[in-house]
Image 1 (cartoon, rainbow, N blue to C red):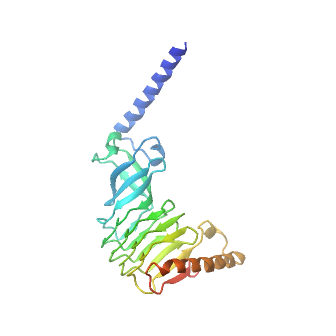
Image 2 (cartoon, helix red, strand yellow):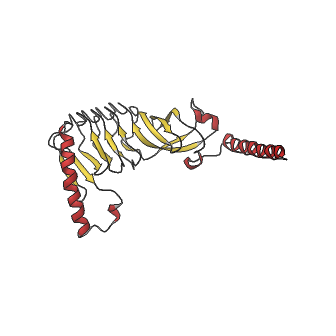
Length: 244
C-alpha cells in the first residue's frame, strides 16, 4: 500500500513538471512572481543595451555589469525587463520566458564614459552598492535620483569627472558611505537634495511634521557634509526636499 501511494505521488509530481515545462516551451509568458522556483542566476542578460547578472533568483535581484552602450537619455532603472530571444542565456531553456529583475548592485565602471545618458531615475529600494567608478566620466549626466534607496554605499570615483552633474537626490537615512573622490571633478555648487523616508511624505506636512523634518534635515546635513569632504565635491549645496 505504501509503495503504491508513493508511486502515485511520484506520478502526479512528474505530470505537474511536464505540464509546467510544456507551458513554458509553448511560449507562455512567465512573470517575475511565477519564476521564484526557476533559477535564473547568472547571465549576462540584456535590457535596453544594459548587461546584467541575476545574483538572487528568489527576489530577482540584479547586478548591472555594463551600461556603457546604453543610448537612453532619460534612463529609468526601476525594473530590468527581460524577454527571451533564444540567445545564449539560461532562459532559452524555458521558452519565451518574460520576467522582471530589480537592481541591487551597479558594478565597478558599469556606466563609465557613457555619453548618452542625461538623467537616471528609479525606485531603487533594493540598490545597496554603487561600485567604484560606476558613473565616472559620463559627460552628459546632469541628474541622478537615489532617493528611494533603503541602504546605500557609494564607491570611490563613482561620479568623478561628471562635469555636467548638477543634482543628486539622496535618502537621509539610507546613505551609509561615500568613497574617496566619488564626486571629484563635478561642478562647483553641485546640489544634493536630501529626502526623508518616503513613507513620511504621505503624511500631512504641516505644523509638527514639518518641524520634525527640518530637525532631521539639520542632523543629516551635518553627516552628509562630513561624508562629502573626502568625496571631492566643491562647494556642495545641501538642501531639503521640503525646500527644493
